[in-house]
Image (tube, rainbow, N blue to C red):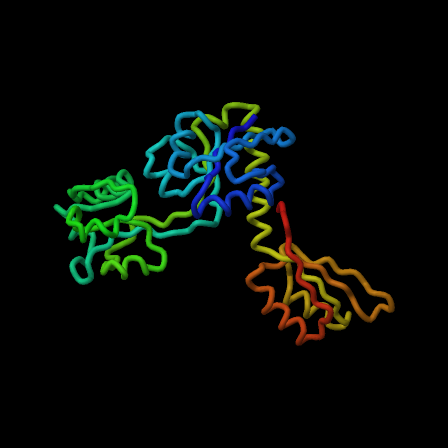
Length: 285
Protein backbone atom coordinates (compact mmCIF):
# COMPACT_ATOMS: atom_id res chain seq x y z
CA UNK A 1 0.00 0.00 0.00
CA UNK A 2 1.39 3.41 -1.01
CA UNK A 3 1.90 5.74 1.98
CA UNK A 4 1.29 9.42 1.17
CA UNK A 5 1.92 12.47 3.38
CA UNK A 6 -0.52 15.36 2.98
CA UNK A 7 -0.38 18.84 4.62
CA UNK A 8 -2.73 18.96 7.60
CA UNK A 9 -3.07 22.76 7.79
CA UNK A 10 -2.08 26.06 6.24
CA UNK A 11 -2.24 27.32 2.66
CA UNK A 12 -1.14 23.95 1.29
CA UNK A 13 -3.75 21.82 3.01
CA UNK A 14 -7.12 22.66 1.44
CA UNK A 15 -5.92 22.76 -2.21
CA UNK A 16 -4.08 19.46 -1.70
CA UNK A 17 -7.15 17.79 -0.21
CA UNK A 18 -9.36 19.14 -3.02
CA UNK A 19 -6.93 17.78 -5.62
CA UNK A 20 -6.91 14.32 -4.05
CA UNK A 21 -10.70 14.17 -3.86
CA UNK A 22 -11.06 15.31 -7.48
CA UNK A 23 -8.64 12.52 -8.41
CA UNK A 24 -10.99 9.96 -6.84
CA UNK A 25 -9.32 9.34 -3.50
CA UNK A 26 -11.00 9.10 -0.13
CA UNK A 27 -10.90 12.25 2.01
CA UNK A 28 -10.93 12.85 5.73
CA UNK A 29 -14.19 12.39 7.57
CA UNK A 30 -13.14 14.91 10.23
CA UNK A 31 -10.60 17.73 10.18
CA UNK A 32 -8.68 16.15 13.08
CA UNK A 33 -8.37 12.76 11.39
CA UNK A 34 -4.64 12.07 10.99
CA UNK A 35 -4.68 8.81 8.99
CA UNK A 36 -7.03 7.77 6.19
CA UNK A 37 -6.80 4.32 4.63
CA UNK A 38 -8.17 4.07 1.10
CA UNK A 39 -8.25 0.32 0.58
CA UNK A 40 -10.01 0.51 -2.77
CA UNK A 41 -7.21 2.58 -4.31
CA UNK A 42 -4.32 0.99 -2.44
CA UNK A 43 -3.14 4.12 -0.63
CA UNK A 44 -2.82 5.36 2.94
CA UNK A 45 -2.84 9.09 3.68
CA UNK A 46 -1.02 10.67 6.64
CA UNK A 47 -1.93 14.26 7.50
CA UNK A 48 1.23 15.94 8.79
CA UNK A 49 2.73 19.39 9.36
CA UNK A 50 3.86 20.74 5.96
CA UNK A 51 7.41 21.32 7.24
CA UNK A 52 7.70 17.73 8.52
CA UNK A 53 6.56 16.03 5.34
CA UNK A 54 9.94 16.24 3.58
CA UNK A 55 11.63 14.68 6.61
CA UNK A 56 9.22 11.73 6.70
CA UNK A 57 9.60 11.12 2.96
CA UNK A 58 13.38 11.54 3.02
CA UNK A 59 13.70 9.00 5.83
CA UNK A 60 11.53 6.50 3.96
CA UNK A 61 8.83 6.50 6.63
CA UNK A 62 6.31 7.42 3.94
CA UNK A 63 6.68 6.92 0.20
CA UNK A 64 5.28 10.13 -1.29
CA UNK A 65 4.54 13.64 -0.06
CA UNK A 66 2.94 16.93 -1.01
CA UNK A 67 4.55 20.10 0.32
CA UNK A 68 6.00 23.42 -0.80
CA UNK A 69 9.11 23.26 -2.93
CA UNK A 70 10.74 25.80 -0.59
CA UNK A 71 10.18 23.51 2.40
CA UNK A 72 11.48 20.53 0.46
CA UNK A 73 14.72 22.33 -0.45
CA UNK A 74 15.11 23.74 3.05
CA UNK A 75 14.92 20.23 4.52
CA UNK A 76 17.89 19.09 2.38
CA UNK A 77 16.23 15.71 2.27
CA UNK A 78 17.06 13.26 -0.54
CA UNK A 79 13.90 13.15 -2.64
CA UNK A 80 12.72 12.94 -6.24
CA UNK A 81 10.44 15.72 -7.41
CA UNK A 82 7.69 14.23 -9.54
CA UNK A 83 5.14 16.89 -10.39
CA UNK A 84 4.46 20.60 -9.78
CA UNK A 85 0.88 20.96 -8.55
CA UNK A 86 0.03 24.52 -9.54
CA UNK A 87 -1.06 25.94 -6.18
CA UNK A 88 0.51 27.71 -3.17
CA UNK A 89 2.76 29.72 -5.48
CA UNK A 90 5.06 32.18 -3.73
CA UNK A 91 8.30 34.11 -4.15
CA UNK A 92 11.11 33.99 -1.60
CA UNK A 93 12.94 37.33 -1.21
CA UNK A 94 15.38 39.26 0.94
CA UNK A 95 13.95 42.39 2.57
CA UNK A 96 15.41 45.26 4.62
CA UNK A 97 14.37 48.70 5.89
CA UNK A 98 13.39 50.88 2.92
CA UNK A 99 16.36 52.40 1.10
CA UNK A 100 19.10 50.59 3.03
CA UNK A 101 20.09 47.81 0.60
CA UNK A 102 19.76 47.26 -3.13
CA UNK A 103 21.47 43.99 -4.09
CA UNK A 104 22.47 40.61 -2.75
CA UNK A 105 26.10 41.75 -2.60
CA UNK A 106 25.05 44.10 0.23
CA UNK A 107 24.45 41.05 2.43
CA UNK A 108 28.12 40.42 3.23
CA UNK A 109 28.50 40.42 7.02
CA UNK A 110 24.77 40.96 7.62
CA UNK A 111 22.55 39.11 10.07
CA UNK A 112 19.68 37.51 8.16
CA UNK A 113 16.59 36.28 10.01
CA UNK A 114 14.54 33.54 8.35
CA UNK A 115 12.44 30.45 8.96
CA UNK A 116 14.27 28.75 6.05
CA UNK A 117 17.80 28.58 7.41
CA UNK A 118 19.18 25.91 5.07
CA UNK A 119 17.60 27.38 1.95
CA UNK A 120 19.10 30.81 2.66
CA UNK A 121 22.50 29.42 3.69
CA UNK A 122 22.74 27.38 0.48
CA UNK A 123 21.74 30.43 -1.59
CA UNK A 124 24.45 32.56 0.03
CA UNK A 125 27.10 29.83 -0.32
CA UNK A 126 26.38 29.48 -4.04
CA UNK A 127 27.11 33.21 -4.42
CA UNK A 128 30.16 33.28 -2.19
CA UNK A 129 28.56 35.59 0.38
CA UNK A 130 29.43 35.26 4.07
CA UNK A 131 26.62 36.29 6.40
CA UNK A 132 25.08 35.15 9.67
CA UNK A 133 21.77 33.33 9.30
CA UNK A 134 19.47 33.63 12.32
CA UNK A 135 16.80 30.94 12.51
CA UNK A 136 13.31 31.98 13.65
CA UNK A 137 10.13 29.92 13.48
CA UNK A 138 7.91 32.80 12.38
CA UNK A 139 7.13 36.54 12.42
CA UNK A 140 10.58 37.37 11.04
CA UNK A 141 9.42 40.89 10.11
CA UNK A 142 9.83 41.96 13.75
CA UNK A 143 13.42 40.73 14.04
CA UNK A 144 14.99 43.90 12.61
CA UNK A 145 13.03 46.22 14.89
CA UNK A 146 13.97 44.02 17.85
CA UNK A 147 17.64 44.23 16.94
CA UNK A 148 18.52 40.61 16.24
CA UNK A 149 18.82 40.93 12.45
CA UNK A 150 19.68 43.44 9.72
CA UNK A 151 17.81 41.69 6.92
CA UNK A 152 15.07 39.08 6.63
CA UNK A 153 14.45 36.36 4.05
CA UNK A 154 10.84 35.27 3.73
CA UNK A 155 7.95 34.46 1.44
CA UNK A 156 6.61 37.57 -0.29
CA UNK A 157 3.12 37.55 -1.79
CA UNK A 158 1.57 41.03 -1.99
CA UNK A 159 4.27 42.78 0.07
CA UNK A 160 1.67 44.30 2.41
CA UNK A 161 3.15 42.73 5.56
CA UNK A 162 6.62 44.01 4.64
CA UNK A 163 5.41 47.55 4.03
CA UNK A 164 3.59 47.57 7.35
CA UNK A 165 6.90 46.70 9.01
CA UNK A 166 8.75 49.43 7.08
CA UNK A 167 10.58 46.89 4.91
CA UNK A 168 11.01 46.43 1.17
CA UNK A 169 12.32 43.51 -0.90
CA UNK A 170 15.60 43.97 -2.74
CA UNK A 171 17.86 42.09 -5.13
CA UNK A 172 17.00 38.98 -7.10
CA UNK A 173 14.49 36.54 -5.68
CA UNK A 174 15.92 33.53 -3.85
CA UNK A 175 13.39 31.25 -5.55
CA UNK A 176 9.82 30.89 -6.69
CA UNK A 177 7.96 28.04 -5.08
CA UNK A 178 4.76 26.05 -5.43
CA UNK A 179 3.34 22.82 -4.09
CA UNK A 180 5.07 19.73 -5.47
CA UNK A 181 4.56 15.98 -5.40
CA UNK A 182 7.76 14.11 -4.53
CA UNK A 183 8.86 10.63 -3.50
CA UNK A 184 11.54 8.95 -1.44
CA UNK A 185 14.67 7.84 -3.30
CA UNK A 186 14.47 4.39 -4.84
CA UNK A 187 10.69 4.13 -4.82
CA UNK A 188 10.72 3.56 -8.57
CA UNK A 189 12.65 0.33 -7.91
CA UNK A 190 9.93 -1.12 -5.70
CA UNK A 191 7.51 -2.78 -8.12
CA UNK A 192 4.30 -2.80 -6.05
CA UNK A 193 4.35 0.74 -4.62
CA UNK A 194 5.81 2.11 -7.85
CA UNK A 195 2.83 0.88 -9.85
CA UNK A 196 0.42 2.51 -7.38
CA UNK A 197 2.50 5.71 -7.57
CA UNK A 198 2.26 5.66 -11.37
CA UNK A 199 -1.53 5.47 -11.13
CA UNK A 200 -1.56 8.17 -8.43
CA UNK A 201 0.57 10.52 -10.53
CA UNK A 202 -1.55 9.88 -13.63
CA UNK A 203 -4.73 10.73 -11.74
CA UNK A 204 -3.32 13.98 -10.39
CA UNK A 205 -2.11 14.97 -13.85
CA UNK A 206 -5.57 14.27 -15.25
CA UNK A 207 -7.12 16.73 -12.78
CA UNK A 208 -4.46 19.39 -13.40
CA UNK A 209 -4.98 19.14 -17.17
CA UNK A 210 -8.76 19.25 -16.75
CA UNK A 211 -8.45 22.51 -14.81
CA UNK A 212 -6.81 24.11 -17.84
CA UNK A 213 -9.47 23.07 -20.36
CA UNK A 214 -13.24 23.19 -20.87
CA UNK A 215 -15.60 21.50 -23.31
CA UNK A 216 -17.13 23.88 -25.85
CA UNK A 217 -20.34 22.86 -27.63
CA UNK A 218 -22.13 24.91 -30.24
CA UNK A 219 -24.41 24.73 -33.28
CA UNK A 220 -23.21 26.33 -36.50
CA UNK A 221 -24.71 26.71 -39.99
CA UNK A 222 -22.99 24.05 -42.08
CA UNK A 223 -22.00 26.71 -44.59
CA UNK A 224 -19.92 28.42 -41.85
CA UNK A 225 -18.50 25.20 -40.40
CA UNK A 226 -14.98 25.52 -41.79
CA UNK A 227 -14.63 29.06 -40.45
CA UNK A 228 -15.84 27.91 -37.04
CA UNK A 229 -13.35 25.05 -36.98
CA UNK A 230 -10.55 27.53 -37.74
CA UNK A 231 -11.61 29.52 -34.68
CA UNK A 232 -11.88 26.46 -32.43
CA UNK A 233 -9.49 23.76 -33.71
CA UNK A 234 -9.42 22.06 -30.31
CA UNK A 235 -6.84 19.82 -28.74
CA UNK A 236 -6.72 17.54 -31.78
CA UNK A 237 -9.79 18.30 -33.89
CA UNK A 238 -13.48 18.97 -33.19
CA UNK A 239 -16.21 16.35 -33.20
CA UNK A 240 -18.79 17.42 -35.80
CA UNK A 241 -22.28 15.91 -36.08
CA UNK A 242 -24.94 16.89 -38.64
CA UNK A 243 -28.21 18.19 -37.20
CA UNK A 244 -31.61 17.20 -38.56
CA UNK A 245 -32.29 18.96 -41.83
CA UNK A 246 -28.64 19.20 -42.89
CA UNK A 247 -28.34 22.99 -42.73
CA UNK A 248 -26.75 23.04 -39.26
CA UNK A 249 -23.99 21.05 -37.56
CA UNK A 250 -23.23 20.44 -33.88
CA UNK A 251 -19.61 20.85 -32.81
CA UNK A 252 -17.88 19.66 -29.64
CA UNK A 253 -14.29 20.65 -28.90
CA UNK A 254 -11.89 20.84 -25.95
CA UNK A 255 -10.35 24.31 -25.60
CA UNK A 256 -8.17 26.17 -23.11
CA UNK A 257 -10.21 27.66 -20.30
CA UNK A 258 -8.45 31.04 -20.50
CA UNK A 259 -9.41 31.54 -24.16
CA UNK A 260 -12.96 30.17 -24.00
CA UNK A 261 -14.81 33.49 -23.80
CA UNK A 262 -12.82 35.09 -26.62
CA UNK A 263 -13.54 32.01 -28.69
CA UNK A 264 -17.26 32.24 -27.90
CA UNK A 265 -17.30 35.86 -29.08
CA UNK A 266 -15.66 34.94 -32.39
CA UNK A 267 -17.92 31.94 -32.94
CA UNK A 268 -21.04 34.00 -32.32
CA UNK A 269 -19.89 36.53 -34.93
CA UNK A 270 -19.65 33.81 -37.61
CA UNK A 271 -23.11 32.47 -36.78
CA UNK A 272 -22.69 29.93 -33.99
CA UNK A 273 -25.57 29.63 -31.54
CA UNK A 274 -26.41 27.55 -28.44
CA UNK A 275 -22.79 27.94 -27.36
CA UNK A 276 -22.19 26.01 -24.14
CA UNK A 277 -19.12 25.73 -21.90
CA UNK A 278 -18.78 22.73 -19.57
CA UNK A 279 -16.13 22.11 -16.95
CA UNK A 280 -14.00 18.96 -17.24
CA UNK A 281 -13.52 17.01 -14.02
CA UNK A 282 -10.65 14.84 -15.21
CA UNK A 283 -8.84 14.41 -18.51
CA UNK A 284 -6.10 12.07 -19.72
CA UNK A 285 -4.39 13.12 -22.92
